[in-house]
Image (cartoon, rainbow, N blue to C red; front, side, top):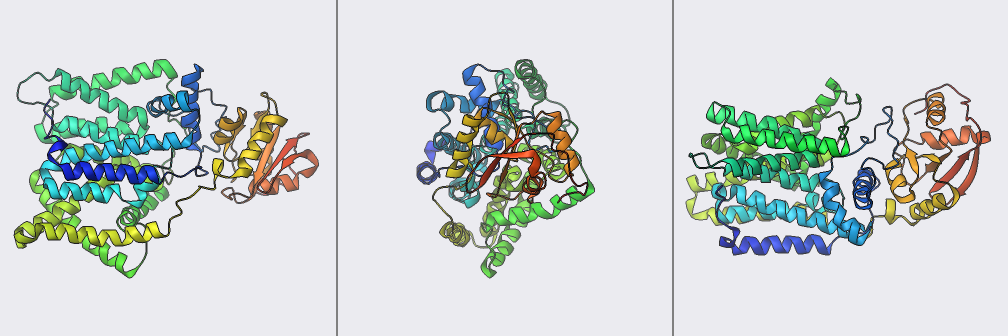
Length: 492
């Protein structure tokens, strides 16, 4: 398999990648946002290190409130496992690992498009992605987004440069199969890459090539091995993955806004709208020039991946679009390069510098309004840490707790915990606590994602609850009797 020219031919690009790595590393933030997907990944990694069953996290999955699946795919937890082994549950070290994944992803993305863009525009691609406030924020989330971005483009790079001239194809095909597995084993939506590889063959070669014939079984074998080792329920919401016209319509409206927000760092000014106009014209021009070049493997991957994103029943924000963003930036730079080479060939360098200057305005504005300090959520909130200490001291390993952020609670207290359906009724909550044998519930004013449902429930059913602990943000109640509902009206 022949890879493109080494990045040593681009000393300025290497310097830029090092600068991006230093910037991201120097601005790592303590704490973590409330969304507790990170807790499941860390708990899986902890189980790997301690030799426990992979899915034994203490999180009690409920189909009526699927804040997350029963377990996540194992590749990202395996990558976290060395950190947990040597540094414990140190989020800063895990975030530093995220920086490494991101810089590696940038390197692979630049390798993939360097022949199309040339040296100057490849550097511009790395700069736009590397200093984006959205990707900067992603490194402070211990999630699978950045590793998935890496494996997505590793697979694309390997397919792009796989030998197809009669030379031995087995090693390259096996590597492609491994890369496909790593993408799927990091995020279940990576299954789109399998369809994308077949689509690429059919459109470009009018047949299924030998490389694909080897790569797909290699990937399938690794997935079967994974299923044998940890089970087959990863990424499954057990029938709660419902697609509706409403969610599809909402995504068709929200995703263009999300992509626009990337270019202007979500700032809303007259200048931002001007910049969006410029970028939109460049992207359209880039689509024209790219169409003349022909269908590529990244586009083949993105077609089924975009279909999954549109059909996704939840609102993941920009995270699900991370693999799309480099392609959009590539198109804009392709359009700029093509237009300047055709109409102002002496000003190619000036044009790319001008675009970078325009984009830097909203980026710098966003950073000026960014808090670089402690994330005062979850472990960054002293009251949450105090709550976890109280739970460890006042409950036993047999107790079951009801709490909105059940996965984080299970990780930091080693207690079984479950979320709840805040769109249901008091009767439904009472029945659920009875079904899972819940002994405690926790209310909070630190966030209001359940719109006060559980706090109102605790107030309404105070005769059946005993306050065991409280601080400024949390209250821990012991369920002293069957908390039979006093009202049948649906709570909101």
